Amino acid sequence: MNQSFYAAAVAASQQQQSLNVVSNNIANTNTVGFKAEQAQFSELLYRTYTGAEDDVYRGSGSRIMQTTTDFQSGAIIQRPDGQNYAIDGDGFFAVQDQETNEISYTRAGSFHWGNTTDNLNEFYLCDAEGDYVLDQNQQPILMGDDPEAQYPVGVFDFINTDDMQHVGSNRLIPVNKNGTVLAGTGSVIFGAVESSNTDIATQFTKIIEAQRSYSYALKMVQTQDEIESTINSLRS
Image 1 (spheres, rainbow, N blue to C red):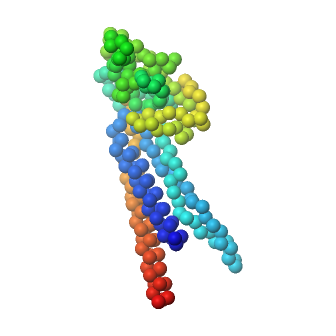
Image 2 (cartoon, helix red, strand yellow; image 1 turned 30 degrees about the vertical axis):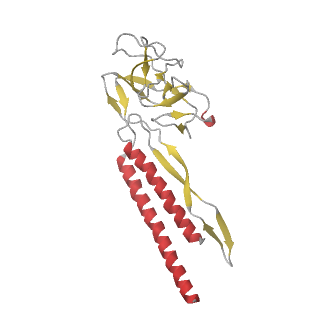
Image 3 (cartoon, one colour; image 1 turned 180 degrees about the vertical axis):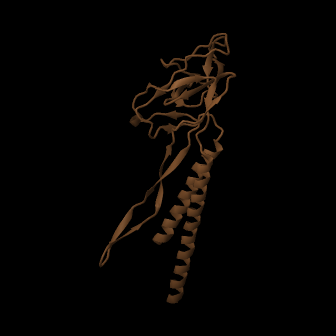
């Protein structure tokens, strides 16, 4: 395949994926504790053509190598009714799956009362998925009779948060490079939640960039097709 066709096809495909990332950010503008993602592009392999004077580089375009998460804090919104918590500073809440015991981490602090199938008379602090919210000792929080009381929700962090794995429902799990779980330095605010950190203006700018890049890639295909057609007509 002609190199220009290949580079243009890759560019169009990758800009579509970039739009998917932006669309997800915009869709979660009002999601509590959501952290926006950004597509990171990297050039594909290129070859060097040695000419009479200078080396000429001809590449194969670029592609999305990874998506990174922006962990910048969102605005704190007061929500005094119910079991709502926000983190001022760095760190995450820890939640534990009742069936698998897997622990994941989130900034979404909209919690509620929940119980277990083992004992319907015991109530625990749970998240929107029905999983246990953990205290600083990584233990489920048994709730008392007062639904308005503040409970000792734990805050946890890692040496670095690069490439933490997204597992859905606004949750993350650490990978090896993140190191072991540590006590978080952020403080808990009761009666509030953290809003999404998605910046709409930035996201719409990225939409325009992706759309223009996509149209330029299609224009490259069209131009190359015209060149090929002209060459073929000269041969006939």
